[in-house]
Length: 423
Ligand code: EPZ
Image 1 (cartoon, helix red, strand yellow):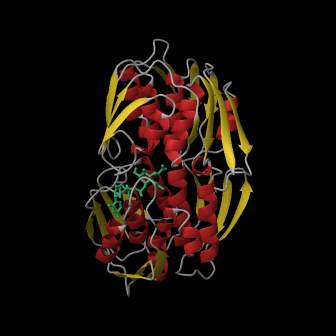
Image 2: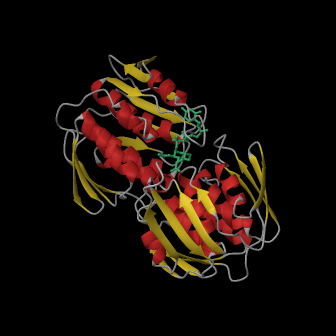
Image 3: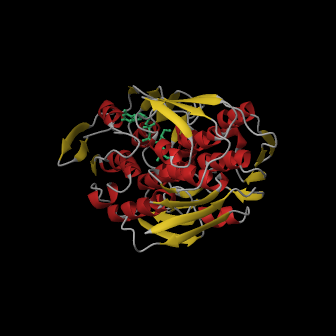
């Protein structure tokens, strides 16, 4: 229905404020199921995915209310259903985060298996294996993951891969289990720490979040409370890349530089100037950029969610760059879209080789997934001429009022409703 139109090539300058982290807000919203007292969340980003999660919680029996911009109250003191609605879960795989809390609270859960998405099959086997380790009997029935337990008993859970979602789901399940659970090979992303801090604010006993070993001492129940979500490091990183390619100087504000070392180091390696001042990071690249080699890795390595955005910078850097995508099996959908703009990129399996070109040329392109869509916006902003981006609903999932905020930097960008397209 909507499209984004960009007249690119203008240097951009100014400051942009980072929203709350989508990938912290989603599991933390799911975790409100664990408490029977009121919870207030602040700095919640106004995104389609957040609205979908709120609808899933409401369908399960949680009362939620928007108190102000970015402020929501949740009350799960009433009857809670153990079954999440397929119609909603199929639109957002992060809905699967309700599985752990439902199992912890009701000792039963029936959640539709999230389908794959453009970037990969995205199984949930590590989640399910962890639930079994806590004493649940897990089966697949009618396209749903079903888990039932007489009791949830703390246990040692070794993750085959440091899955972000599995670490979060299992932390939530273990929070109310009997005794201690230890998650080994846990994901270390900042969003894991944020979830642990939120749960501890409600009375959980979790230590080691942010390290590969997380200890959870189960408690009887969680109380209510208030919590403010961390800044979105991927949104902040997207704007930092823009600062490096925009021809101007962009101040990314209300971000957490501690979450950005891998990206900032790569941008510096490419020749960008980066000044850090508290929760402000100012990025420019007055002498242009040089090619670089990147491998995506679990945190604190280079984030896969920044791969598409950095590729845009590589497309106009001097020399060649190489990206190895180790997290997802199909996360180069943006390559063919960038090629339509004159980028010189070839891929083989999980590696992309990028030869810098003088400039990109505007063209009609598609957003193939959330971060690829963000990359296409970056490409359109620096390309000569007009770029038209379709399927922008992908972008709406993870970026709040992107066109409005970019206009404030001087971008010639607008969003149009196009009744012709039937997405
Ligand atoms: C989270 O997805 C993020 N989403 C993703 O961000 C992010 O790309 C990803 O972590 C990696 O950092 C949210 O937090 C809502 P994983 P998640 O489990 O939890 C495999 C964005 O753009 N795996 O760490 O689904 C999986 O297939 C999104 O905001 C299993 O094999 O990621 C993948 O190859 C995109 N079995 C790898 O692990 C499992 O049971 C990493 O997945 C679980 C995962």
